[in-house]
Structure formats: structure tokens, C-alpha cells
Length: 369
Image 1: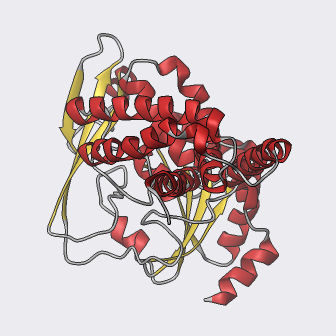
Image 2: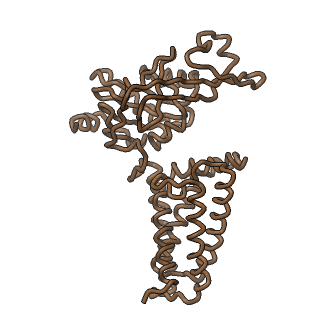
Image 3: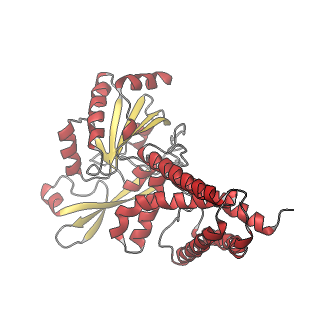
């Protein structure tokens, strides 16, 4: 007969495995969540550690889950699981009360929970974890002691390698709206107001302007003020995304690009200064093919215009770039840069910069649809 001790071990093990997997399959997304915490707690200096912590955390959760499920080394690992749950529960309680971050990302993008829901989940989970801790000496593994250590080591190396591979390519499972096969077309007619926030370089003063009613053509003003953020108000439309693309003179071309009846490529780089230089060389070659075959491509970035101009001049890219909020770009694709192929609003394919297609592969891809 299965007792509460066994139920606790299996339940907590399965939750840890699921939580670790959905984080590990999208390590960059988990890193973004960790960065949010660093910013919220005023530890911006630790942001460069976010990716390493992302892989380490997901690996720890997954391996602990496997250990629980296989009943290996629980006497020792219980001393890791209980403090870990206490720490997580404390953090989520603080999140629930003060909301320093909107989403803790405990289940990645697979399952969205509010901060209070996350706290209640941890509160229930810690009850079963405590039972495991109290009964830790009663767990008997059928696996030899030495073999248990080997199992844990193998799973640790394998899952960390798996997560690092996902970082260097696109996640094998995409839980976001911008996944292959989704239709990102609009429903209804929209009215959009874009408010641009600029900061004075000398005194730090910030001003908000309704686009395009700001002195963008005044070179003297532009030299003294820098763009820092934008706020979008949208009404009268149902969309799966909050992407907004506009020309320099304020004309909204989002629908025109997203719902292009022909092939439409989006070259996405949320920061051109941090992007892979080899990827720009690859897109330069593809750009020639796009021009010869009259295929549309648009660049989306959150970098400043002068940075984009330097990059486009260096790599001789002559397609238009549009400034987009970096959060929207990071949601679209987990790569900097990345490439997205659409047709009539439907996402046909996406590529990490490590996997940009050559001309032959691209031709085969276009023949599929």
C-alpha cells in the first residue's frame, strides 16, 4: 500500500522534474527572469551571471526530481531540498506582497501563475517536502550506493549539456505565442497611440511625446536627447502579440509586415552591439538572395539608430530597421540575432543565428509552403 511518504516523494519529484525541464529547455528565457530579480533587488552587477545561474538552477531542480523519483541519496539530498523550498517560499511570499517582478517564472512559459498562486503552490509543496525530510532515513534505494552517485553525476552532466545546447539553438519546445505554426494575424481594426520617452543627456530630464509629434527632424534636439522607452496604447483590435512597427514619420506598418501575403523575413537583434558578428556576415549573403528574388525582409531592434547605422554600413545591409521594445523582441525569438519567416501572418520557421540557413537550405524551405 502506497503511504504518504511515497506519495510525497513521487509528487515532489515529478514537480521538480517538470519545473527543471521547462526552465532548462528555454535557458535564455529563465535567464531573463533572473535578470528581472537582479534589477528588482538592486544587484545589477550580477546580471552577467544570469545565464549560468539559469542552467545551474534548472539542472539542480531536474536532478533533485530524478533523485526523488528513483529514490536515490534522499537521506543526504533532503538537506538540499528542504532549505531550497524554504528559500523559494520566502521569495515568492515577498513577490506576492510587494510584486517586485510580475512573474517568477517557476514553470517557465509553460504555465503562468500569479505571484500569490506561486506562493500558495509552494506552501502546499513544502508540506510534502517536510514529510520527505522527516522520513529521510526510512527511504531505501534498490540501487547500490556507488551506482547512485554515478546516476546523479550522469543526469547532472546530461541535463546541463542539454540546457546549454538549447541556449545555442532555439528551444526544442516553444511555449510562447511566437512559435512555429501560429497565426499572428490581427482581428479587427486597431487604433494605436505610441508615446515615446526621451531623456535629456545633460540633466536627466525625461519627456513623453505622442509619436510622431516630437522633433525627430531637429538634429540639434536629437543630439541632446536620447530615446529611453516607449508606451503603446491600443484599442479596437484582437492580437496575439504587442508588436508595433512604425516608420520614422510615425506611420504604423505592423499589419503590413506581419500579414504580408508573400514571404516576409524578420531579422531580429535586440542589441546589435551584443549580437554575433558571424550572423551579420550570414545575413549579408542572404540579403543578396532576397534582393534578387524580391523577398521582403525587415530588421527589428531596440538599439539606438546610430548603432544600427554603423552596423548596416559595416555589413552593407540595405533593408530597413525599425525600433522595437527589447522585451517584445526577446519574446519573439531566443537569439540575438535571430531570423523569423512569415507568410500571411503565419510563422513558417525560425532560426537561431547558429542555424541560419544557406541559400540551398533556404530555397528548400521556401518550396515547402
